[in-house]
Image 1: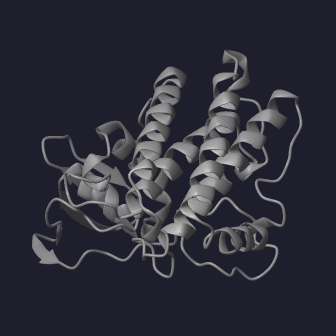
Image 2 (image 1 turned 180 degrees about the horizontal axis):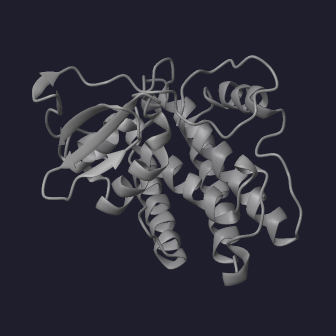
Image 3 (image 1 turned 120 degrees about the vertical axis):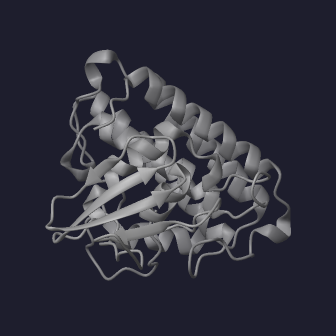
Length: 258
């Protein structure tokens, strides 16, 4: 388990929000309707989701500070999806304005968390303030890459993800390892780490950002991953679904996951 302090987490979230703002500031109106890196989602969908999740995290933190609990989204998964679909076709100016406002709200709530407040309960995953802030970090970093703006080295693809973020994803996404599997993740220049405890072992090798991208269901951007089982090359193993923290009250409309 990677140890990340509250100070490191706050700094990482603020840095990720700044990178997202910079990316959005470089967009033009025609970008909004263009496909993102997520199936069936335009860039407008991604921006609408980032706005919604930032506001949702802000209210988790604001209610937690008062010792209260509230659902992540009104209406659960269905409410979340409807809000995304409704906002996705708005103008870039409107989307950017709403996103910046939601980010301001989330960062203000984050910066107001006292040291004793990190373990306060929240409704998200029936967990804590710390866990919902980790969720915001994941959303900001991964979905900025999902906008698909610029090539390798020019945009904010997985190749820009920090080592610390990748290590966090290895921890969080261990839930995607099937029960019968055990993945030995061998990132170039780093000690191997094992995810899962099933009897079938597969060694997966490559750049740390590519390994994290694959676990997150994204396309590796720097090279090719290699999988070996019993000393033979094999296909990359199948992954379990992304661990969702949103109770589904009605059938989902949008299927993309963060």
